[in-house]
Length: 136
Image 1 (cartoon, one colour):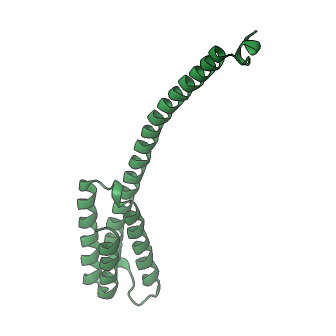
Image 2: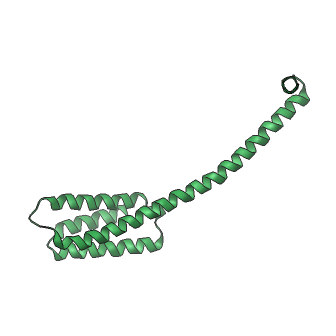
Image 3: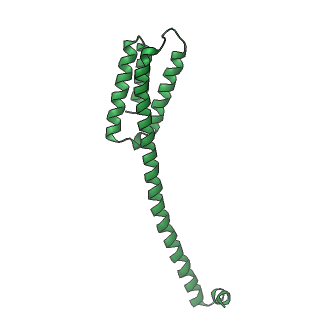
């Protein structure tokens, strides 16, 4: 009976079918927007967590600079890895909060100072350039 009622070609039946369809569509859109907001919030928090991890890594690099052997060619690989971390942060700069930006600048400054202290002035200026072009 429901099949025959929904698929007859009377104006009243088509109006009912269209009303039900758009009602269900409206509910689906409302649910979609609600979930979309939650997903967006989750992604922002994930990005902020990643930024915090990278800040911690910069502090770790600043602590490790003292142990780097300047004569070793692997120093350049370490510097490239740091530059890659800075670029990763730069890709997420819209999600960085003000406090994180302040921590990031402090960590970068400590790393640059340690590098300059340990005769890595060229590499320090290279990191400074990457930081300024990707994050600021």
